Length: 452
Image (cartoon, rainbow, N blue to C red; front, side):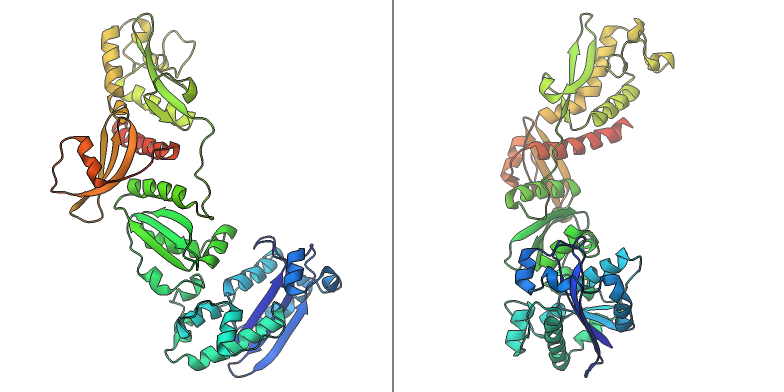
């Protein structure tokens, strides 16, 4: 048993839109055995563009029943039947949200005539209801009205049942199949071909425009997680997705760097601009009048020759605290403690006593330089080596004079002595604040693991 469903709404997004009209046709595979169609008072304003599209005015719905008044009928007519709609995610989620507002969990098995059509009638330029009906000789009476579209969907469904010689419908209804969860415009083969590896993936619309770029440690797993996300942005994005492509990177850091540059290249509509903290902080060192080497931090614009950049004060303090613990530095001279004669570490015998005069300045400064040595690498030439896309490959990130130059891949057998020689193997990329944030986080984590 099937219920062919269509709804018209106020069009304010999944979470805000309300039903203005609903039509449900109960179909046994041969004929319609029951029907329910009604205007619905959405209890909110209907935008002019929606009225122009559907012809439904506020005057028409002013005396119509509100959804809670027809909810019981909707439950009864759809009970024990497969919920069928053209682009089923839209109609199903709108109705489900209406029931959610009433405290009722509406749950039905779903079937999408867009996805069925793509399988059974391949090769069409568009799978909109209007276009498919034109190609199949189906007349739509009252387009963009619930009953007119529901009846057209029913006739399309009849034709799909007749043309289904490969039992496509059975595979869609198989509880082990994930077909119904896929975006209606996306071919299952595209998802099946996704790798389970590090990389960057691209969601594209029917015009092949990139609408979203993401990074993943497991591309297939991350991509499919979008299909089950209940957030409005995710649902809207999936409805527009007609293709997914990818690039493997071999490691997380290369995926992060590539994702960042691709977002800035394509500016996809569903990517939020990479967030930039309004304030950055710099770690720096200086000698006082006694020759003692201090470590300190301040807002980046006030920091003389920063050794390392951070994008939160807490991150900076955490690293300094670990440096103090590992190298027995003085929290007072790392500016973690203020207005004290001797630091807390000295009191618990974890500082050698530079703050009390028991340690020589020379010995203390040696430990400070030792603690800073790995951090100073970031302002020099640096090649980060990671796992490649294959066993015979190495992924590389190149930093010259503290500036990010790009990333690439080389064969493990290639021997290179100077960092500058790696330039021929990388894809040149632009350095920017987001890239520096990614690299800083990566290097801090690497160093952090050695500080623990």
